[in-house]
Length: 127
Image (cartoon, rainbow, N blue to C red):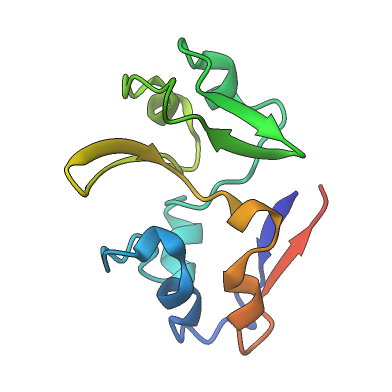
């Protein structure tokens, strides 16, 4: 599964960023789609094979139905997955008195960003 972005259609309206659960604290992790694509910043491509999954020493990263997920109970926050990710899609966040590794989960296969995109620039496809 992959999130595709058509930059010609993107109006840079920010609707996807506003609805994104990763922005629950208004950290604006996805500042805007064109920057995210050109800088390879923050959008998980659900790689196969996935260097982050293969390199995780604690086994915290794994795939469920083609989507890479993080088992917070197993993650030791070593950052190896961050180092090997070509898309800077993994990040450590401090929220509610705890640290955690996070990434886009494609909303478990039903991405909210795709639903709210007014221009149809975002599509969700099986790879």
